[in-house]
Length: 220
Ligand code: VGL
Ligand code: ZN
Image (cartoon, rainbow, N blue to C red; front, side, top):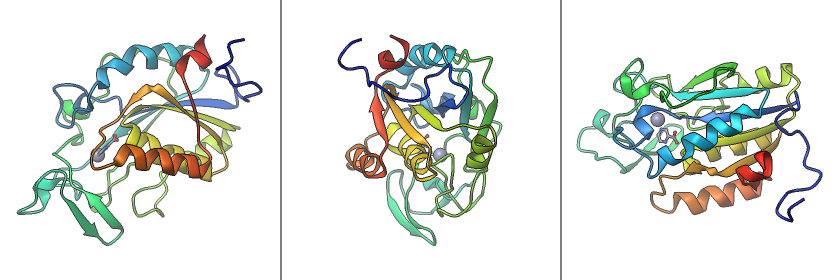
């Protein structure tokens, strides 16, 4: 066993109590997309390879109505990456992305995970953003995913995808808070890294008890 391999880590992919959540592998987050995550395309092969080793796989899909509150274009005079205060807190304004039923919102055709069991759509309420796939940005509106996982007997959550410093990290923190043993598969993620967001995400994940590993720790 290589020294980097975490020993005694529960719930590998074949374990029915484990799930792999692949976050937002959508056209708009890949190069050429409306909110392209640098190097986003580089995770696709690894994500597919990881998923092949998991019995339980969940996909997430950012899925905004036209004119969503998180779009800079919905706020006259504002530009992408401006920060505004909304009733639920601080909101970074984004380019228009992942509009419901548009090509940009589709899951990438490079995802090869036919056995994925659930697609969680999030960010579909007009006035609330949702980075986390467990709770919307008001921190109180649940998506129902925690209940689904609990009812399925899931104890360990692995996360990978886009973007590490937003939807992946917020989801990971919420998974850990829900009591799931939570790992982020770091090399199967890419970040947007705006305004210190990546460093903040790592601090938040560490504080919440999220563990980090590499894909080879699972597949190697
Ligand atoms: C995301 C910004 C806005 C993400 C989604 O998937 O990380 N980031 N919407
Ligand atoms: Zn979004």
